[in-house]
Image (cartoon, rainbow, N blue to C red; front, side, top):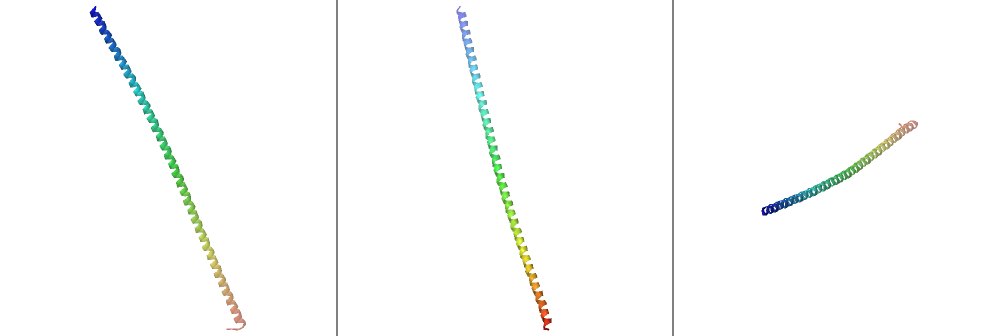
Length: 132
């Protein structure tokens, strides 16, 4: 009877030990699962943050490019306006020179005409009064 009680007690201890090992294993498995879940959540959060940061950087880069393009466009327009002003000034100078040249030619023609008239008058009076 004593042997039976010892065997029974031994099997109870073994059974209790097995239950304790099973409980510890279950707890360890649950802890591992929670750690894995937390790691996955952290990785997902990190990935989302990285994606958001990348999108913000891309948007900022696009905004800077647009700003640079606008500045370049304004500079090109200013350059074109400057060229147009220079062309207009050049045309005005050419017109002024043409007007001066025409005026000079008219004055020269008037002088020639006056000289011709003077020669004719001189010839007329010379012949009239026989001034030869």
